[in-house]
Amino acid sequence: MRLILLGPPGAGKGTQSARLEQKYGIPQLSTGDMLRAAVKAGTPVGLKAKAVMESGGLVSDEIVIGIIADRIDEADCAKGFILDGFPRTVAQAEALTALLKQKGRGLDAVVELLVDDGILLARIEGRARDTVAAGGTVRADDNPEAFKKRLAQYHEQTAPVSGYYKSIGELRTVDGMAPIDEVTKQLDAVLAK
Ligand code: AMP
Image (tube, rainbow, N blue to C red; front, side, top):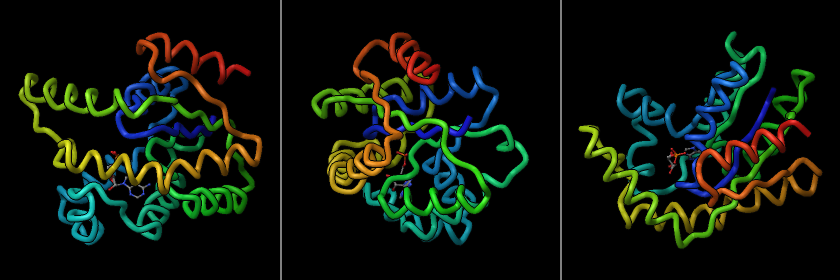
């Protein structure tokens, strides 16, 4: 199954992707996780991405498309994958369509988690508190200032990605404000269609 999860930052894409990964035995491909790993390792991509990520901006289309193009060719993606955090611009969505077409493949589903802006900031603050309580390190961009920029970025650049998939008849939606288990149930239901 080749699947995209769309939704604003804090919508629960990571949580739901982890569950889908278990259920379908396919990897979750989070460009955010891959970029954070590149920053940590100090690779050339990481060095380019660090400042823009910390401020809540978007890394260039060229970089993330390159990362995904390489990643989906790896052996563990043969049965499919769950994209989390990609595509984030219409240009990325178009590049993905072209990339899959070249390989004679397509997407099985694009699902958007719908969540009102009002509860996202509270969720991000909660995520930072939980991370600190568990002895972890809070993401550099999980602070109110960077988060507001990420949300504005989402409305400007990423919301049109839903429009792109809607226009080609591939978009399905679930209520991302429901409790986590309920969202999982709704996802299972729309994926079974
Ligand atoms: P995330 O973990 O998905 O919230 O991503 C964290 C940060 O990584 C974002 O705020 C962006 O700076 C960068 N990033 C992740 N995925 C993408 C993407 N598809 N396009 C551009 N920037 C991205």
